[in-house]
Image (cartoon, rainbow, N blue to C red; front, side, top):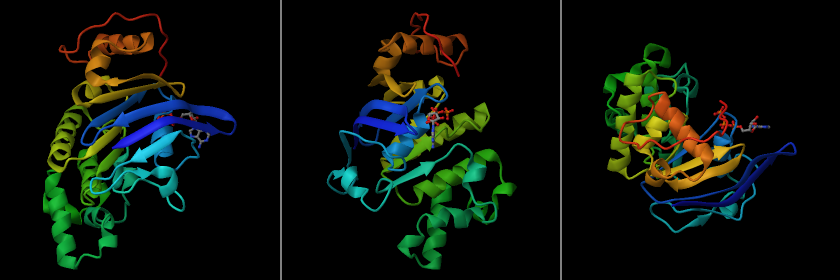
Length: 268
Ligand SMILES: Nc1ncnc2c1ncn2[C@@H]1O[C@H](COP(=O)(O)OP(=O)(O)OP(=O)(O)O)[C@@H](O)[C@H]1O
């Protein structure tokens, strides 16, 4: 549903992304990993037309329509039709002055729902992310970080997106809440047939979650593989080293086979 061929991004004369390609089928998850500064967030922005990238081809196929060439679509607009974002820090993503219900409802204001319909849609979105309807009245300062991130998920979900971009969605949360929200994400992905692109530093999460892996290093692709192949037979020494390091730190499940690392240097 999202195919990117040879995307290049230069900012102020510096190469940020070089020949990045991937092809993500509908309903699946691409995890984008790589050390800090490798270009993960820039890739999400570039794929949404928010940065001046060049590419051979960038095609997006919404659920109920033919493929769209984003080069054409972006004449006069940005973003991908039917997509939403969930960011790393839920508290800065939500308006502190607005009750959560209004922040969630903002996503569908353009649909001009009647007040009762809007209220029902907000309650349903909250229920989808396992929050009670009364949360709609609370402001961000009156909820936990995990509840705030669930509200951000509800804000994305209420618009019934085809695709959600996540930028480090769990990194502001403790391990138990991470696990619970990851389970909610998986459930809503299956239920609503949504495609996910997730930037993460957490290889353990990627091992449990990804269908495809895109590993960036210094703006270049180190691996573009199915997750199964990536964890069994990674494409480069650097990726072997990443997996070995995650094993050493106890960040990968035992079911992921150990691969022997090389001497590739990893910085964070
Ligand atoms: N607007 C910008 N202008 C100039 N350089 C930028 C801009 N945005 C990002 N960069 C540079 O692009 C490179 C990649 O940054 P990016 O934020 O995409 O990395 P990242 O992999 O997402 O890092 P992190 O994991 O720390 O968030 C960095 O060298 C960064 O300084």
